[in-house]
Amino acid sequence: MVKIAVVGLGFMGKMHLSIYGQFDDAEVTALCDAHEDALTLGGSAGETNIAVGDSAADVSGARTYTDYSRMLTDGGFDFVDLCIPTHLHREYAAAALHAGYHVFCEKPMALTADEGRDMIRASKESGKMLTVGQCLRFWPMYVRLKEIIDSKQYGRVISGEFTRYSSTPLWSRDSWILDGSVSGNAALDMHIHDVDMIVHLFGKPRKVCSQGVKTMAEGFSHITTVYDYPDVAVSSVGNWVCSSGFGLAMRAFIVLEQAVVELDSSKQPMLTIIPDGGERIVPELDEKDGYYHELRSFADNVKTGSRPSVVTPESALEALEVTLAEIDSAKKKSPVSL
Ligand SMILES: NC(=O)c1ccc[n+]([C@@H]2O[C@H](COP(=O)([O-])OP(=O)(O)OC[C@H]3O[C@@H](n4cnc5c(N)ncnc54)[C@H](O)[C@@H]3O)[C@@H](O)[C@H]2O)c1
Image 1 (cartoon, rainbow, N blue to C red):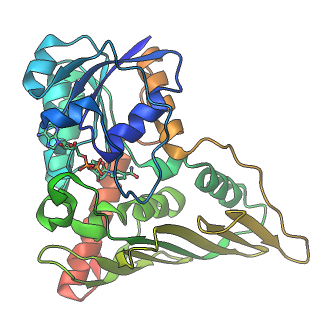
Image 2 (tube, protein in one colour):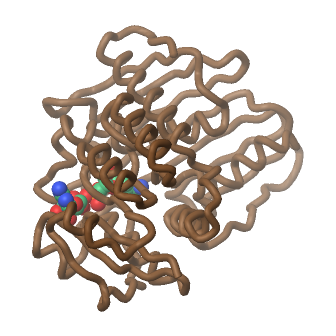
């Protein structure tokens, strides 16, 4: 049995609990939230842009805490699952690692690359595992997309366009996510999903050139980027100021030498291959989502003692560094080299 402490019981904390409820070899033994009322897990996660499942884990035996240090001292779990605001990731992850626990930390890894490096150092010093919730690497339609590209069955990639448009997230506790100084705004908080996928598929770009639009004091609510690779044209858009009725749409449009691959979460089917001269192909996809697979994978890592290989802390740091370079480019209004 893998024993888990979930910290932060808002949108993602509840999402993760709904997934642990589907594992028969996992037990949530501790819950922590700075706000006492969150510990009752009452109410829904509010108007979130992705629905939270309802197969909640049985937490009747879990100890509850508003004091994180006390929870770490009491122990009784194998890993800590951090679903707290981003500016707390470094401090909370380092504390858990040094206290002897493995850590699953929600994305983005941290607000700055130095914070990310501190987390990696804490993992190395303690010998405990660290991974980050860059869930697209586990999302079946993106997993299939990577398989198609890597197989070269349709030749090489000519171009890739990645977009993520969302209504403004209004569910977060005390609206922390709308304070760019603690969330990084859309450019860091949400767009990093596509940046991570771009790096996963094509490696680190040589340069980024971005344009940002501000709608609040800190950070960019919209970011458009062109990535410099030797022989493939890659671009992206991240935007969370769509009208309130819009919801969330994630898309990737890939042109290969002998096919087009279209991924669009707002369409059915969500993934289609349109080959040269052939019929459209609709690949069969695993029905579980990326949240399920990333947590399943980390629970297995903890059970077997094998280090995470899909989202390493170093890969999460790389995604953070590229995203921060984009933000820097948008601020300077000029390309930034990596
Ligand atoms: N992987 C994804 O697709 C995805 C989606 C949404 C959010 N996230 C990430 O998950 C993290 C949490 O976001 P959310 O949307 O769940 O936010 P949220 O506001 O819904 O939940 C955060 C919870 O943390 C609690 N909290 C705040 N300070 C705390 C502290 N010091 N100690 C303990 N608990 C504390 C709050 O009371 C709240 O219950 C963020 O890093 C965010 O970027 C990831």
